[in-house]
Length: 183
Ligand code: IMP
Ligand code: MG
Image (tube, rainbow, N blue to C red; front, side):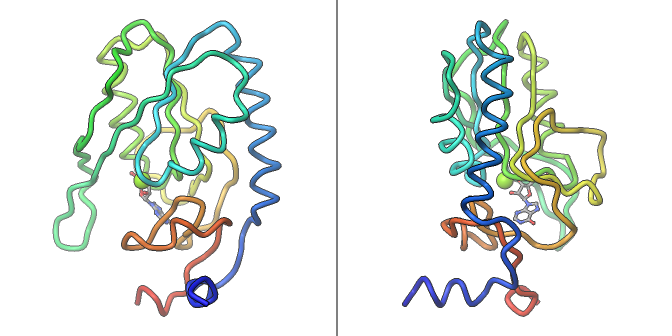
């Protein structure tokens, strides 16, 4: 089947759907305690955080608004320059609002540094970062998530929203892509 062909490109599964679900329950409980009377804006970073955001939203038991941004990083040759460009802005005014940024993975940290600085400039009451995955070995700028699902090794991760060239986002688990697919 098509699903079997897609799965053939995966080297190994790091976290199964059940393991991810269990971890999201824990993260959501923590956030639910903290944000009970805060009325935050949940900002999903498209497109990678789409599944993570929607799975988390269902578990968050407090009043919130949902919004999203889309960003892309400028690339010079094949090397990332660390410059980030806003492609799609928020539709909410976040002045004096608590903001929770929902991200798929923190890699170099440039994307989240850019967004956190942008939202701080706009007068957000507070800014916290909730990331499904964290690749701490790759960090280039000083930014940390307040809530992390899983720390992952320095390998190319796909699934649960994360892509390679736009593919594999719909895999329902977190896995490592075979090197032969991208080399
Ligand atoms: P950063 O700005 O370097 O932290 O990168 C953030 C973005 O790079 C993430 O939102 C992902 O879209 C993408 N990214 C980083 N590492 C991976 C990976 O292993 N698999 C898929 N996408 C990744
Ligand atoms: Mg992304």
